[in-house]
Image 1 (cartoon, helix red, strand yellow):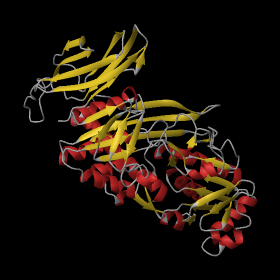
Image 2 (image 1 turned 90 degrees about the vertical axis):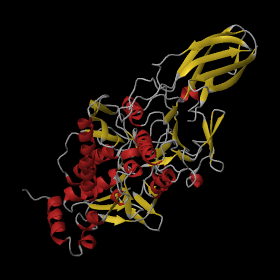
Image 3 (image 1 turned 45 degrees about the horizontal axis):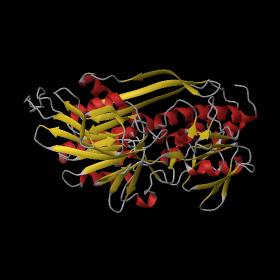
Image 4 (image 1 turned 180 degrees about the horizontal axis):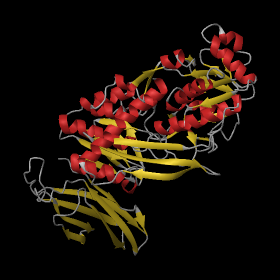
Length: 421
Length: 107
């Protein structure tokens, strides 16, 4: 291998990493800062550090010490997955791959000076910045609801304590009571997520509270995997689930957390559990950094997820507006690998591969009744565009559905190992 | 079983205008031909009649047979010449009648 400046430094860095390498190398190693340690940011930090073999100094800024995946949190609600099984930590990323993990909030980005300000004080310089902050909720999206009401009416759309709270409310709901979900408008995190959640709540009720009712108030005409979900609901939970779409006022809903009432375009219903999933936008730091558009998302270039506002910044995962890919952990993980390659190409002359993206979203409807939808994607001039797609079919036999569910477990174990293992 | 009837009627219209009315009622609509998990027939239990009156005059009177899907959705058009009250009724096999009303201003 011909020795150039970068590979020389890389070799030295690798050889001395266990000693005081950061002090010596801090001056010369290019610096990448990653904000957000979920499926997008966690994957990017790990892959950049791992594949650059010490040539790039990677700092991951993530406030939580233990990360709970949103994916599979519905399975926890349904009793198919342990709460602890959703949680993952950053130990391996730091110890094996040398990522500098900083548990703090990023509160500002100085794009001229190329520094990230931390809530705990101080700032971190970068040559390239990766922002993967996930979602935040649009204020006032559901009149009567704000985050101060999230203990009475949980969103459970960022996993962790909210998920545990919602599960407790479902399991302690009075006999024959009503669980209501205020579903979000497009676009939002995990398109089939609200409907998989309905399936899991119905599964719990069927076992523990069979006269309970489920009411979905939905601003959307249609939703992801609708035919599959409706077939499954009719089969497993007949008469339990009612959905009010925009043709009956599902787009004109307000809530009263004090009285546990929801007002559907003038028709007031008393409910026992109310799961409000508000309209969404890019995580706050993307907005603070000036990377978002009027729709609230961060537009990026389809070939490498680079911000359309700043060439030194990449935005990935749910916060990005890239085209056809759904907002999912699988998408973010896939996008992060493209970003990792693009950054290593720019900073260390690594070989650049054409971007290929993929996604699959599995959903569990009932015990061993799994379905999926997915696609592969390629960049075009304007956006990331769908190339091939596939979806489970109605009327599939039980064995195929069981295999699909088993496949989703394999995927879960694989992706968390890819990021945290 | 809680049954919630819902209707969508425009709040206002001009005299002689033809408006669309949509109705939705949550109901299992058991046909009497399906079996449960134990292989026992689920007894027939449907909404067997739906009516809509406007100012006391019949607009729609509909007989419903087994086979209509659960949560029946019924949409129809009606010409309105004057302000008034629509009264809707869904008749259940078990004798229950679920009602809903809506007012429209015509002028």
